[in-house]
Length: 429
Image (cartoon, helix red, strand yellow):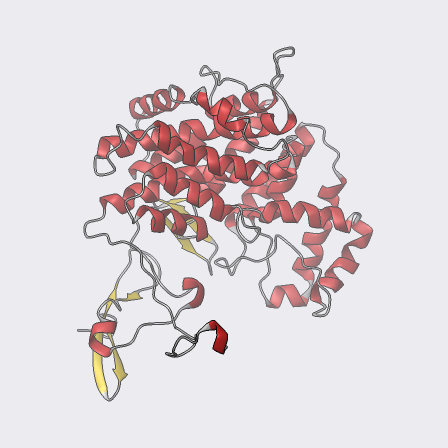
């Protein structure tokens, strides 16, 4: 065997050969599955930053080079030439659809957009100011109660139907979360419209006044959905896979992914960016903000810069920056926050502190500004993320069920608690 086929680990004076698995692209992985049995040791990797939890053929990221591929296709090409619904098909099926295949997929999604009328009563159980992500997670989990009788997770046809239902119904439920929070009546989906346009109508149209939708608004949101559709084994996707590994149904698994996405370190980051820009307030305050961000004794942080995976410029940020300018110009939005964002980006990219640490703007830096320009409220930003990421979540859930020999996820731990001790009766403590 060559040195790339194995590594040798020595423990307790004994040598162990561990096979090295070769990917299509990216870094090789050392197969440590037999290590506990051979050496009596587990591995310790907080946050799983150096551990591959699964084999997957869906998404590839090269963080050093700033590369993102969906099923081998560069994100730049898909953003320019594709649509979100076509990207969803690609993630689910592994190949771009023919004209006939896409027509069938679009028809299936369009005819599963309705949510059960009973969900209206379910929504009324929420407090009027409940966070939309709380309502979304609970409502998606409740789908398990509506579609439990004809769902066999081991049946490929049932898995495909669950995927279509989730992709179709997520915008309907998301719009209902928003409308309930502001006291508007729920809006039914108009299936003669395309996916993103249909969602925007459900969000903003009222019975008394038809919605006049600027095409650039739908184009911008469709682009954001493409960019957010999948991102390899991130926290929420890993959560979906971990829950799915137990045999849990896809609605419960995706609901778990939604709750993981809700965290400010994950899907809530674009909301944090907008709050930061509002805190800075004016372009004149940018230099002061940069100084504060570099001060270890100051709690102020620049949100939207750097990424755990990308050590180069986030490829999604380059795409979304251009769309951000286009949206604001086309919609006639004169947003002072964009000027703050532009000056902040310029200052950070010139500052030695940020350049040395490769803290480049990420996708969250601009997405919040676009959402704001589309009149989507701040508390709905992460919901937008969830709509898009549903395509990736369910693709990973299906892939997991199609993988031979897949096992229930069961991480190990390094125990640091008390040693063995005897119980002491309460009157003797």
